[in-house]
Length: 389
Image 1 (spheres, rainbow, N blue to C red):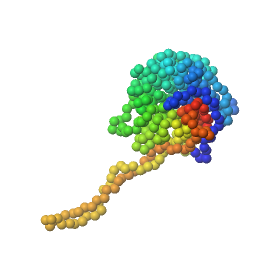
Image 2 (spheres, helix red, strand yellow):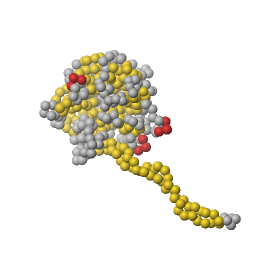
Image 3 (cartoon, one colour):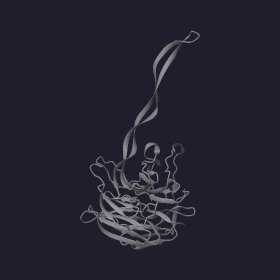
Image 4 (spheres, helix red, strand yellow):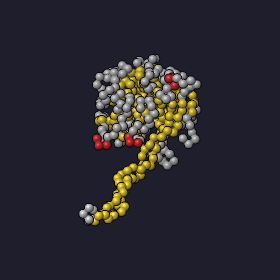
């Protein structure tokens, strides 16, 4: 962290209903610079009891609360913003509901733009925008289809994302551009990758290279890095970091990157590059341990065995039972190794959200982040804003 540690900057009052065992849908986005060269940081969340979505905006480094925008959507379950930093006219949000409907609305005013009915046969549990804002990705429950890609303007299905055997809990897509990829997580413990769309095709790992690296519990959230190189997966057994090109988990022998217990939320920090122009990959997580943790994907030099070397130590002469001489060769087998650069996930910092008395209300079930600010949502709905990242 180089001298920095996460610290609380403010507390937002609980205005969100939550459910035990389910994550809170919180997303963050940064607006363009103001006249005073200050950036706006905003986060979105929902209140299922009141049927509303909220957009809270903070001003600059002071993180002073500026505005709150509300949008009404009956039976709302989730929300996701689309906010290109240099095109405020396209600042929109998509929200999903338990009746299978989605609504497109303005982040600036909360006004309804489009409404599409019965997009899914069951409740919508997560929504996400395509990189160009033309399509909306959905995950949820249904009869046979648990995830879809629909046209944002018309609401018609562009392609069903097949393959899941149980309800999909989360979805994310490419942020950089083509090739357009979609990633889903479901209750069958699988993270699935789709590419080429639309129409999308389910990507398969080469059978010879497959390893046991799926999660062992429900997938709560998946999130794509800004350059589309890595995908985060938060699950009941910890955090997975996936290489999009190889479809393999980053870490030792393809195991879950961080065995961190029940993890409900993950979010990438919008980092740029370090002093050597290398891309920085940092992310935050929130979980049942009542902690918000900061992680970093690093290059680590390691050794691996690539074969063996056989050396002759000595050759001795000996006589067999018939009196004939024969050679007795003594060999030494040594492992042959080489150095290689591997990705490794390390814990950089952690912040405890526990109060004076630790209760279940302190569980952190959702998190979002920008380059400098993290907002974590507790089980009771209280949101903690953290700086110093």
